[in-house]
Length: 357
Image (cartoon, rainbow, N blue to C red; front, side, top):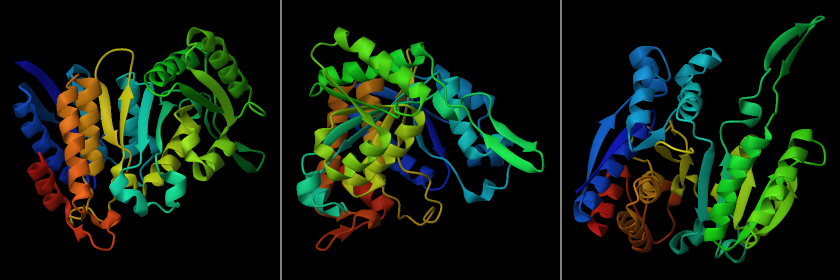
């Protein structure tokens, strides 16, 4: 029997609630498919600050690096907004990505037929949308040096540095090209090459790699146009390749095509070692502890973990099919509620998913 070690990071806000649902489903589906999962919970973000004073304890990072896969729920709380930046929950997540050397973030955006009317866009615009955002995760303006704030002749100036090396662009582009090969063979690289030197390098490196992937059609799009096109005609996209800043913004915009950011999973991968799998949504502190959370994105993140991180594709299929079945049956959490459907809380939605399995 295959055995897999999974570190669970419940984190903050609704994180613990949706983690309970995902763990229950993983336990059931692993037994069905004849493999074993051992779970270890570790603190991160606000919960880690409360426990240890640090958003990413060294013990959490070491446990994650030693696991076969890591499943993160959510981090962040307004309780910690007054702390210095290096002590805030979000810094723990950045440190985890850097410490695990995770440079590629994958965010699938696929319209679920049962939820097509939940989107704020018209049915004829979003019907059939199925795209993947491939975002570079450990470079760009979030990590570039120098950065900071300085006093300048009676004024104050803040500054950040957007920087990419050719090797950083090459490795994320390789991931995007390989995914495009497995999908519909279309890759759109997003940049701002008309004004940014770093984007000109980005575009040059993507073009240099393109001949190695003759079956992939490559196009380039400025980020402002890409933001517009995602709303105007999202079906034109198959794989979107982006840097860190642009991908952060565009992936959240793409998420809302589905009607709720509470439905979308993600994966963060490195060249080797375990991957990190997490919902796209945040910690939703306004509904934490009220049994109102939507656990679907966490469950779908668990499915991505099974498929990509643990190579258990059949088990992943079962989790995804359970989500589709429950939604087709008319069950909804509050963020997805529509006329004629049955509204459920987080725990009850978990029970329906278990029944579907």
